[in-house]
Length: 507
Image (cartoon, rainbow, N blue to C red; front, top):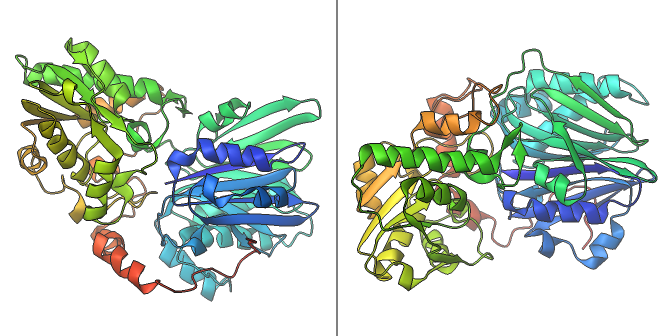
C-alpha cells in the first residue's frame, strides 16, 4: 500500500506536496519521495523513513517548481530498500517520473518483455519501475517531439492492455504536465480536485480525498476505472476513458482498515461504512448470543473505534476507551517477524486498568491478520483485571494474501488460513470470538454507493478479480513474502550499497 500525490500549481508546490504526504502518511511509513519540475529541470529527494525525517529544510529549498509528484510507501512487490523509494525516473522519452500505488500481477512476465523486446533495463525489483518503463516505451513509440493529450491517452491505453493487477498512478512528463490513471477495475483508490487562485486553477491528484481537503482543494471526483487525467503546464485538464471494458472492483479492505475515516472513496464515506460495519456486527451478536453478558465494549485504537462505537450503541452496552495508543509506533501487522510485532504491540498500547477490572469485556478490532496483536491485547486485558475477554472483528476472517498492493503476509502466516473460528479463538486466547459476515461487510460499503455492485474481497474470499492468480502464483508470493524470506533478504543487504543508479538524489 502506498500514497500518491501530484500537483500542477501556479507557484512552488514543494510545501503543498510535503503537507499532502504528511496527511497520507498512514498509507506508507517506510519511505517517502518528492520530485518537482522547474524550467525542464527535475529536482528529487527520496529516502527511507517518515516524511518528516526524509525532508529537511535544505531539501525543501531545492525542490523548486510549479509541478511535482510525491509518494509514501509500504513495501509491495520488490523490497524495502531505499533504492526502491519512489518516485522512479526514466530519461527517455522527455524525462518521466512516476509514483505508483498497487501491485502488477504480471510484473515478471512484462519485465522480461521490456528487456527482450522494448530494449529497456530495469534496475530494481520494483514493479513500479516496470510500470514506468511500459508507459515510457508506449509514449516513445509515438515518435513525437511534442506529445499532446491524444498521445498520452494512447500510451495509457497501451499500458492497460499490457499490465494486469492493481495500479493507481501519477506520472510527470518533464515540461509537459502530470498524468494520473487507474487500473480498469479501480482496485486502488485515486481522485482529483481543484483549487481556484488569483493566478488561475490548480489541480491535485491524490490517493484519498482527505489530502485534497487538507490542502484547500475541492474534490471534483474519483478517477474512474481505466480512466486517465492529464493536466498540462498551462493548467488545462483533459480526461479520457482508456480501457475497453472497465468495471468497478474497488478494494473493500480500504474501508476496513487502510483508508482514513474522513476520506470519500468512489462516492463512499469510509466513516459511514465503518459505522454500518458496527451496526451489522451488533446485529450478528444479537442473533448468535442474545443473552450475552458483555459489560463494556472497548475498541483497539484507532481504526476500529468507529465500528466499536456503533456496535456498543446498538447493543445497548457501555463504550469505553480502555487502551491508550502511542501514535509513534507504526502499523504492526506490516512489520517483519513475530518478535518485533509482539514487542511493538506492547509499546503501542497501554491498558487503563479501571475499565477492565472485574468486567466482561468485548474488544473490537477492524480485522485479525496474523493474530499477534489480538493475542497480546487479550493478555493485556486479563492482566488489567478483566473477568472475561471476548473479541469481535469488524471484518471477516482474513484467509488469503492481498496480492494487489500491500505486503500482507503469505497465506501460511495468516491465522485464519485453514482454521475454524473455534481454533482461532483458542489461539488468540479469547473466551469468545465473533467475525463479521462477508455479505454484511459488502452491504456496509455498498450502501454508500449502490452503483458499485462488486468489490475486491480477495483477502476474505480468495476470489481474485483480475482472474490471473493461481496456486503457482501464490506459492511464488509465499516464497518472497514470508517472514523467513524477509529476514534472509535483510541479512543479504547488510553493509551493501543499495542505492540505485537514478536521478540525482542529493543529501
